[in-house]
Image (tube, rainbow, N blue to C red; front, side, top):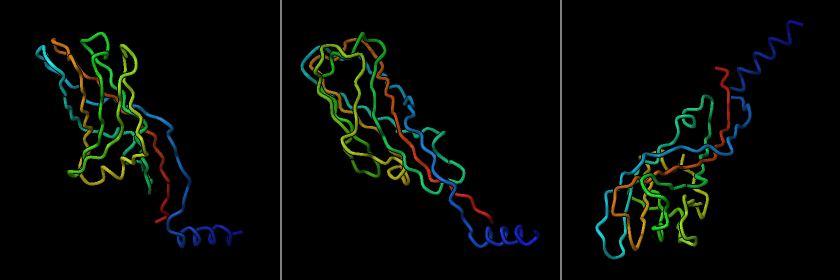
Length: 172
């Protein structure tokens, strides 16, 4: 019977890394930095551009034993504080900026009179773990309106992700 534990120990040492499986989080949402928007002067149609760091939630980074991490952007949701709704927003063009590249994520064109939230779903899968491996990624939103509010308001962005990790264990 002593031979079985010794053989198992030898097998574990010889294998090096053993795959334990995969872990998946179907969806986790994270509030991004709120953006204070100053009052707009009354007048013609205009565009407001906002950039905010696309912070990856700390819950999803540094997973112990993860040899591979996929972090997919599922959607970005905009809501606002200081205004009753987002009915003044006509269009939104959403992109991720990284290393000088602008990667289009999604666009929005108003179809309802006064939405309280605007949800933007990426047109194609976007792996944020790969994008943010080098430099920090930024979320860039170009918002077009024919009449921005003439009082200050705050844009509240929220990003929702899906995550998958392959978990490994090293015997050494």
